[in-house]
Every structure is written in C-alpha cells, then in structure tokens.
Length: 123
Image (cartoon, rainbow, N blue to C red):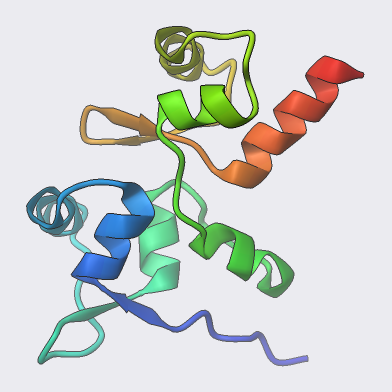
C-alpha cells in the first residue's frame, strides 16, 4: 500500500504550527538544515518539519494530528493539565517526564500527547 504524502507548508504556516515568529521559524529551519522543496514562496515538506520536531516517522493516519498547531505550556495547562503550572510542564518536559518538543529555547506540546496525559492522570 502506497504511503500518503503529507504535503508541504510555507514558513508562515510552520510558524503558526510552532507558535513562533516567522523569523525564528526560518532560523530553526536553517539550523536544522531543512531545505525547501519548492521555491517562490518557499515550501517545506511536513515530514522534514516533523523530523526536526523529533518524529522520524509519522503514520498516514496520524498526519492530520501532527499538522495541528503545537501548544505552548500555558495552553497545555489551561486546556488539559490544569493541576500543573506552565513552568512545571516545561520542567517536566526538560526532564523527559512529559512528551515535549524543544524549539530553540521554547517548549511545545502536541495536543494528542497532552490529551493522553490528561486521560491517564484522570484514570
């Protein structure tokens, strides 16, 4: 069975996904040696973006979840992890106790991962 391609995104789309400025996003793409797949308004393959986030392989059924904007610690706290402060969420990610993505100096979280944590905390 042929794998479904996730498509590509502009720097602005990736910046919204990461909740970072366009300039910071471009720097992270450059530092990560992520090359655009299209010129003009440069477009980057989602698979390369996800690799930079630490996900080397994303199954086709998970691609839409991986395209959703990442959550900042305060958003993760407000929506799902109400018992933790945003600083605690970042600290737990730094220690490897919460699944997080470090982009430069900022921590971000996938909604699906935070939902799973919320569910296990309430079980």
